[in-house]
Length: 336
Image 1 (cartoon, rainbow, N blue to C red):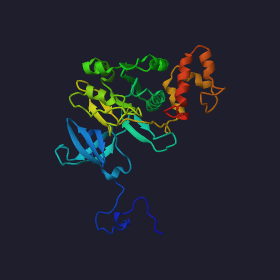
Image 2: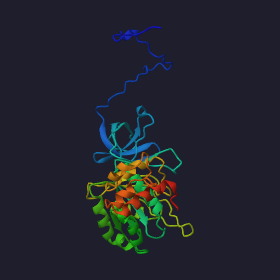
Image 3: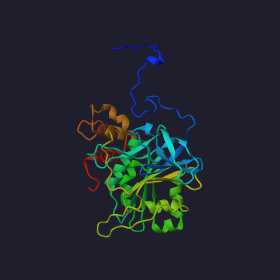
Image 4: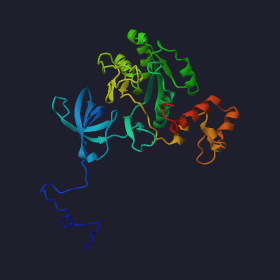
């Protein structure tokens, strides 16, 4: 068997036979130093719409990226035709490092992760106070996913004209999650839009929520000049909404540095990908108390040091209750 040293002559190196007669295969990838940065705003059946400077460019993923997929919110490097004109197509040759990744699985037993959005700063969890009825377990799951991804959560409660928000706000009061309460009349007058906008300025915010909660209606009001999507209705029999958003899309917030990312309505939010040990990071008043916990403590067992930590007055008991409720979401279904 022939061996090669460090200083082999180029003619001595064997190349793999290429029956097609084109260029020999190589592991060397081009650097694409001329590539221009863009942001992915939509993904539709392998075609990605990217914002490059002030124009929208249609692109596809370069083969050299392999199985790595770009998602809405990704910062990418693009080459090719960047004019944005009709029937032109550019190539995405690099996906830049992500500052955050919001993931979910179909259910808690599904090991396949689905990336919802990349590089978001905030997760707006939209829920109706009635029609359909609020689902606290789904809210809990979204909160866990937000904490795991390092996103700031925001509760947006809609349809307050149908039911008061007091009970739901009491449930989440100990978490200290910021919230906005809206009604249909306030959306029409613009009063609620102004309150929500204050929470979005300067941030990239992903909107998630159960179908029929008014998420798309709210997004339409925030970006009124674009009239983002058609709105749907709630089925009077099942209490479920009709999906009106079929794919995620990033939209610039008018008059602001912020972005809104509207996502399809969800009926489940699996947390198979979440390591429960990371959820405690969202509770800085409780985290120091875990130093006395046994190894691999679930924080809901007799030897958990958090009970004594709270008993000594270092944290509010309601905070510990909220932590344990969130950690237990993987043990329950959203409909419980």
